[in-house]
Image (tube, rainbow, N blue to C red; front, side, top):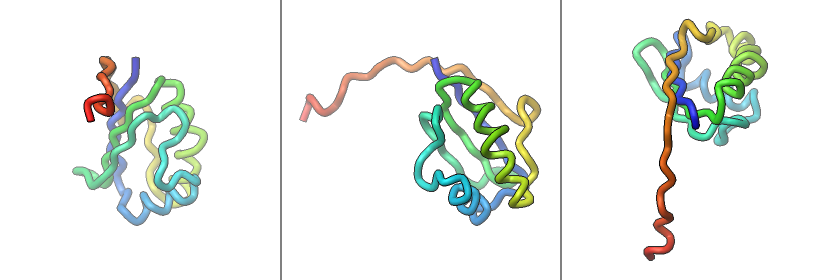
Length: 101
């Protein structure tokens, strides 16, 4: 089972998002435990939708890596569970399309 986490980050901009990725050493790749990461402008700053292998991995990333970087950049921290919207995700394995080529 996986979990979808949708977060709005007030005050986050494209520039700050890019800078935070550089500071965390994760530019272009998701953190450990994050299976999918999608981000872009949202209604209140920046919206991030991610799929995590576990809620523990998501919370660990938010508190030990993301939080300190956001503090350095002056971005309000995302504090679960107040801001987080969590969804359980059941994924059925799909046959590989490679065999059909």
